[in-house]
Length: 171
Image (cartoon, rainbow, N blue to C red):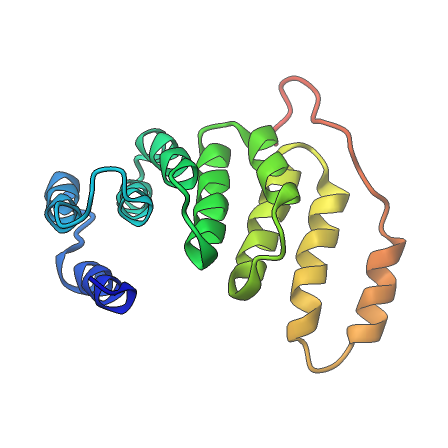
């Protein structure tokens, strides 16, 4: 099956069959699609991780993302798997690992804005609020028609913050 035909099936699944009110049904329907692929297929593992993630089952998604990446996921799917893995890790309280993944990634291409957004969230969770704000603003600035020069100057003036919240403080 070509990559385009596979992607069309996945898109159709999310448009027609995905139902977050029926998580087990959604997982079963994705499983039917995945049965068309080899068991260790990186793209299939990535899609299985994604459906678990979309349903709020991050603990189940994390090892699937790791398996997909280890199985040789390539291109945009590999970048997205890393971003989604980091997001899931952050959601289960492993923001330090999420931060490591997001900071070590290459430019996310069409998903660079998403990488930067999740990076800002992970930085915030790690108590690095100034760095989180810098990251978010630097991701936003290219989308603005005006004020780019002044906002960039303001961002460079923001202090870097690498302190964690004190025990008992909200993140």
